[in-house]
Structure formats: structure tokens, C-alpha cells
Image 1 (cartoon, one colour):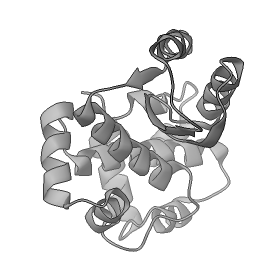
Image 2 (cartoon, rainbow, N blue to C red):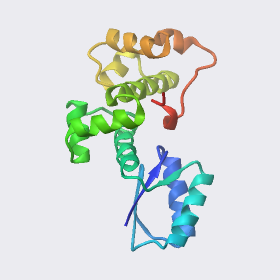
Image 3 (cartoon, rainbow, N blue to C red):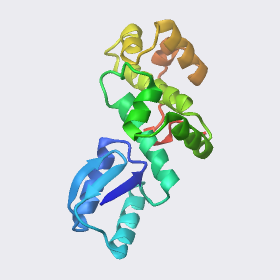
Image 4 (cartoon, rainbow, N blue to C red):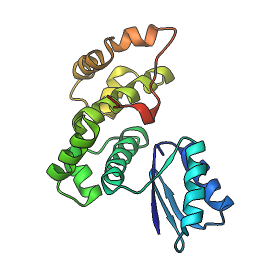
Length: 189
């Protein structure tokens, strides 16, 4: 049985969910961002217990089909931007469509209706958050970061960074109090 979990965007979240399932006596086959597959069915009582445990951890068990679809899209984007060394070289629309097994226009329409933001802007917000993270680590220069995140040039990355944050990447790097956004809050309008 597959369960969909909202706000599950990090490795820590995966560990919390796995522990919660094990404590409730549920065996998991897969624990992935936003998705858990367990062996067998789950009783309504155990489902309610799981909901409570997840809520305490800041996570949410989802039932609504549109919400599940949105969470899948968000998790594909988060994984693509934050947890891969290099972004796919194909169009993001093709990548997301392939991963979802659905037409991109349908996915994009539902995402925009529910989130109030386009998938493109959601991806940009996450890419900028990734740029901030990489700047903080101070291991890569802007040229390397722009290549890694598939920007056409350092100039394009800098323009997009300034448009989203109001700061240039170099000014951001010099700030003492570097403001980052938690992954679950990126792209929230």
C-alpha cells in the first residue's frame, strides 16, 4: 500500500517517517520523499495514529488526490534540484512529465491552480535556494554553480538570483546573517 506524506523534503524526514511506521508495527518497502510503500493494508485506527505522529513531526498524511499530485510534483523538483549532483540536461517539463507519467500541460494547470505559482517559478525558487546553499559552503565558485544548475551563464544566474532575493550573489555571500528558507517553505506565496 502506498501512503503519501506532505512536507517530507529531507533525509531527516525520511528517518522520522520510517521510525513512526516501525513503532506502529508497519513494515515499509520504500521510504522516499513524499511517498512510503508498506506491506499490506493499514487499519483506520493505525492510519489515525500515524496521522497524529506525523503531525507532531510537522508532516501530514494526505488523502486528497490533487494534494497527492502536487506533493509528487514538489518532491520531484526538490529531489532534482537539491539531491542530485547535476540537473537533468532535458527540459524540466519533459523530465517532470516523464517522472509523473502524465501530460505536462495537465500537471502544470493543476499545480498553478492549487499552489498559485507556476512550476517554472517553483523550480526557480528552489534553484535560488540551492545557489544560496552552495554559496554558504564556499566550495564552488559562481561559474561552477551556474554550470551545475544548468544556467546558460553566470550572468543569467546572477540576474535571476537578484530578481528573487533582491541581492547579488556576491553581496549575499558577504552577509553575516545569511537568510535561507526551509525547503518545505520554498515557493510558498
